[in-house]
Length: 70
Image (cartoon, rainbow, N blue to C red; front, top):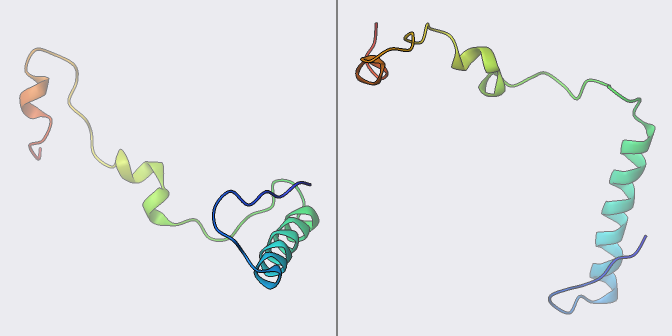
């Protein structure tokens, strides 16, 4: 693994701390089995939330009904 500082001038202690965080994260990711659940899913990211109501069928007046509640 190669780490390159592209901006700034970190002290050796700051660089060591950053590398420790990166290595700890990589070690934790390596111990998880593939496809493991990462925790409860947030309802904001649920795709069913976006399609909770019917969308208008395509047609000449669809643009006018797009944002009006049915």
